[in-house]
Each structure stands twice: as structure tokens, then as C-alpha cells.
Image 1 (cartoon, rainbow, N blue to C red):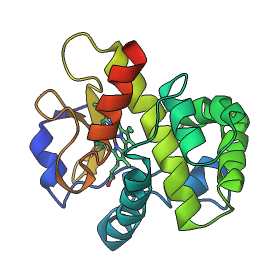
Image 2: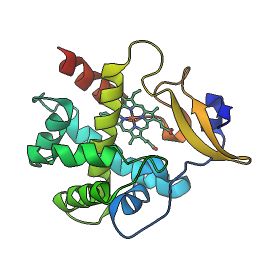
Image 3: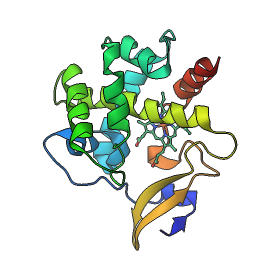
Length: 187
Ligand code: HEM
């Protein structure tokens, strides 16, 4: 795949790949979170994610980062495996499965059903799970080396070496919380 520089993250001609839409599973989730939408939908959905993040800023650390967030959101810690399963297939280019879709559906249900607010909560759980794991595992270089965009000439891998938390409208809103959870997890 062609590698593009991080400045494309601020270029409207490059859109996030969102995969097919659907009425359930990860297909439904992706089309209701800012990470995989663009334009006015992304702005509105990002606002919902930021409201969830504000609720979590002071969340007391539990056994691990994902359990911390589940408990702070008033959800059962037993959903941790579903967060991991959904995170493993969150990006549309990763291997999809019926199990990951079922996990995403259980998370949405636990968060109150198919609304944008439920999607925002699941988005935070799944993004934090993957982001904090990457940050904890990273030795040198960006924790997440590449993201993807669809540009005028097709899909490209965007180099995050000089933008480890992204840039432009999709820049990570969870950096502060993610750094805190990663620091507490390694302690
Ligand atoms: C509490 C932890 C975290 C949460 C809740 C979180 C949440 C999010 C969300 C919702 C987005 C999409 C924003 C949008 O599209 O408007 C995002 C983007 C991003 N996050 Fe995080 N994140 C967390 C931790 C991390 C960590 C630890 C990293 C590691 C470097 C990271 C790297 C990124 C990157 C690179 C993007 C941009 C992706 C793109 O533009 O394609 N995040 N994050």
C-alpha cells in the first residue's frame, strides 16, 4: 500500500475508510462513531465521545485500563472480553467475524441500545483498549505506526511517526486519559 505523510490527515480530500454500513455488529458501530465518519456527522459524534471522556477524567484505577473504564461507566467488568473482541475487528481492514459482531452488539445493548450515546460509550471502551495496549507495548516510535485514509488515488497508509495521536479532525481526544491509564497499568 502507498504510504502518505501525516499532513493528509488535515486534507478534506482524504476520508476515513468506514467499511460497509449495516444494522448491527461492527458495521452499525463504525457508522455511529467519529473514528469512522467524516464531515458534520463526525463533528456531532465526536462531541458525544468528548462528553463521555469528561465523565471518565477522574475514574479511579481498577485492575487494568479497560476494567477501569467499564466500572466507571457503570458496566459489568465481565464485558472486558467483549471489548477485546470488538477491538480486534474494529478497523474495517482487519479480519471480521460473527463473534466480534456479537461482542459489539452486547456492548451496545449494555450501554442502552442503538443510540449515538451508546455508540460513543462503546467507541471509548474499544479505542481505549487498543490505544492503551499499543502505548504500553511501544518501545520507540509511534505506538500506532499507521492509520488509513481513502484519498483521490485510493486507500493509503498514513505514517504517524510525527503525529502519534493523529492530527486534524480525527486527532485523538483520549490522549490525556490514555496516557494516565497506561502509566497506572505499568506501575
Ligand atoms: C482512553 C484512551 C483513548 C481513547 C478513549 C481514544 C479515543 C479516540 C477516538 C474516539 C478517536 C477518533 C477521534 C475522531 O475520529 O474524531 C481517536 C483517534 C486516535 N487515537 Fe485515540 N484514544 C485513546 C488512546 C489512544 C492512545 C493511547 C493512542 C496511542 C498513540 C491513540 C492514538 C490515536 C490516533 C493515532 C488516532 C487518530 C486515528 C486517525 O485519525 O485515523 N489513542 N482516539
